[in-house]
Amino acid sequence: MAKHICPFELAENFMRDVLVKVGVAPEDAAITADVLVESDKRGHDTHGVGRCKPIYYDRIKKGILNTKVEITIEKETPTTAVIDGHNSLGHVVSKRAMQMAIDKAKKNGLGMVVVRNSTHNGIAGYYSSMAADQGCIGMCGTNARPSIAPTFAVENMLGTNPLCFAFPSDEKFAFNLDCATSIAQRGRVEQYARDGLTLPSGWVIDSHGKPATDPDAVLQMLTKGEAAMAPLGGIGEETAGYKGYGYATVVEVLSAALSSANFLRACYGKKADGSAGPIELGHFFFAADVSAFTDLATFKKNTGDIMRELRTAKLAEGATRIYTAGEKEFEAYHHQLEQGGVVIEGPIAHTFDVMREETGLTQYIFPWDEKYAQMMKEQGKKEGETIYTDDLIKSMCLDPSFHASKGCMGACNCHHRTV
Ligand SMILES: NC(=O)c1ccc[n+]([C@@H]2O[C@H](COP(=O)([O-])OP(=O)(O)OC[C@H]3O[C@@H](n4cnc5c(N)ncnc54)[C@H](O)[C@@H]3O)[C@@H](O)[C@H]2O)c1
Image (cartoon, rainbow, N blue to C red; front, side, top):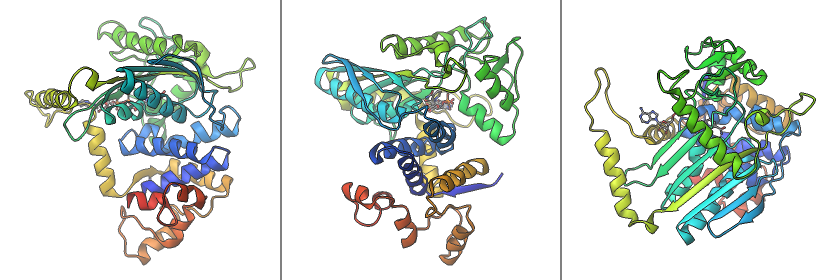
């Protein structure tokens, strides 16, 4: 399958402008595009640019997702808040909710904000990182479309419900455990389908409890309640699948019970007539200001020492190194910076082509376009190197006034910000 390296700015600006074209405010579109590209940068490509279409673009076009982000605070105390996301873009709602939790923690030691009527918010680690970057412990989670079966059941009831913790450290990266409470999450199944691969046995069971390994069939079966994903620990009790099932339930309760969001089967996102409708999910965001407990530098060092000592454990035969959470994402980011952008495979390139055509954003030239290769050749660039012609920079700027408002030095702030 053809793979192309697309400069981060090109992918981010394009998705932002696509979302603006379908009615999202520029600042909200910019947040969504940022979270999507950040997912790829961290190596969580299952939740990156490949999800712009179908998840966000298509749902907006079908009227399932509101383009106007109108967040209302339904209840508030100095340390807590309940927010209604009014079925708008989950990334934007979540970023604001986490910042609200952090602000409360900075004033009062702790902050917890729960959200109802929200939508898919991508990588949970984006929001926990915000807390760690601001000297707080961050914790967050979200419920999602039914995927995981309870232990001893074959019906998908719980979302793959990520449960995420981030701690500031004196390492180059924060400890950031950012993963689903299932063995694999749906994005991974989508990726296997795109790559034409068979799923490992043990990830998904069918309604008879037998392994289901065809990813296309599994995606269909999940929407009909005919397949279920294994919780962390696996199917049954032998490898303690009830622990993952329990943690997924913890996330479901924290996301939906405090906020009065939809939960379990109500998260299928289907209207009474069976057609696709809003899912109206719940999320939770928690921040604890480290300095309310101890000196931040001491905490960072202690956390760093724990991570460093873990990495000194005796290696298993054949293994070459030990990681701690957040480390692979840090390395993925630097690897991609070196290679010049995000890897976009054929099927995802196709979604970009479709969005470009449908929105008329034809000024965008992608690495898989003939013209792009020609430009690379003219400039003597190798694959992976980023080309920025004046025309391309200008074409990346849908609304120059938006860029100007962000302090852009030239035609495109995003270009000047990162290059
Ligand atoms: N919004 C949603 O509905 C939803 C649902 C599920 C998952 N997600 C997101 O999908 C993304 C991917 O989830 P996933 O479950 O596939 O993640 P994953 O299985 O790739 O695990 C990632 C986590 O494990 C750590 N890790 C990986 N290898 C490690 C090792 N050898 N040693 C120590 N730590 C290691 C990483 O640093 C990271 O914290 C996450 O960002 C998650 O938040 C979102």
